[in-house]
Length: 468
Image (tube, rainbow, N blue to C red):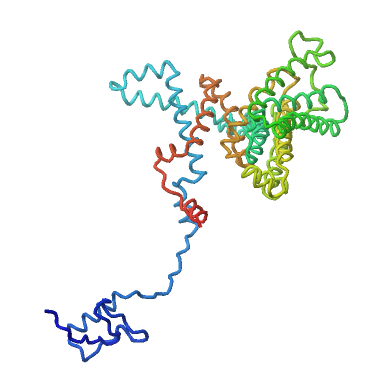
């Protein structure tokens, strides 16, 4: 039988009913007070109950990370900078493997790997490192030339020749990269940079060969003509997209071919074609119509185009961040239905966005026609429009990222020519390395897994803020 004896309340607690468990401490009573009337065992039990009660402590101040600590934590984390840099390194490693596979002498040496491992690895390293060293010398600076210049054995123009070639190659790539990045922010994929650049080259080149005005007048006219013609070619895509709903990818692919065929026809027209040549080439560009060189010297080809490219990137960055049209552009890219509900004219925004992209790509073609090309030819632009897609993706469709990617690709092209000349490695390998860089940048999970990158603290904090 169960005895029904009264339950005595402990000091500092209220009495509890038999069906509601242990008693709770009375508010206002010190839980850590030791009652001399209780035996030692009771005091210990009383103290344990007090320890189990929730304690209200003052919130501790969060320790602020120093700059050095934050830098160390982000150095080997999965942030955008580290992933992009390691993607470039990984692409160069793959390029080195392809160099070995493509060279018969080094490839045959690997048959003796087990017999002469040191010689095999040493010869492989010497071949790959020499090739990449030649690429650096042709893209940035040649230390041997600097030493000879110091001892008055060569000219300073030869010292700056590599960086001049890099800037010359980078200018049109920055323009065409921006022509892809701007529509991308509006939810559009512009792969018509090649056709728009061709039309820009036609506009600027025609002014350059047809007029003979003072340079201070003719150069701006040529640049304006190239931007306008390229902008009209992009505007046509935007109007068709807005009015008919046609996909911009299909439209730009078709217009690329039309622009290329139109260039071939245009060059052969009377008054444009060089009468002294039998091949398809126009009359030479007037000297007064060419973009001024940064350093007036025949050896250094860098011209005003690279300055215009950087200014264009700065203008696009300001437009996207602070301009009203940039806000409307980004709003349409995020949600066109919500943008239309807010009063934004979606069709007009799409048309103007493609016109801006076409003008940027047109400036890229103009920088070639008035900068480095002596005349209009069907292959004068190479693949700058399609390479602009790679530049935009590597730059993560951000204006200043596009500038950095354009400089990198310009350096690879300039260095690839030197690598082929001195190391015998085909310049086509440069295109493979460029494609690998974009491939690894587009697959960040692969880069993180290969290098075992940890989670970026800054990215985790941003994700936490986004979740609320």
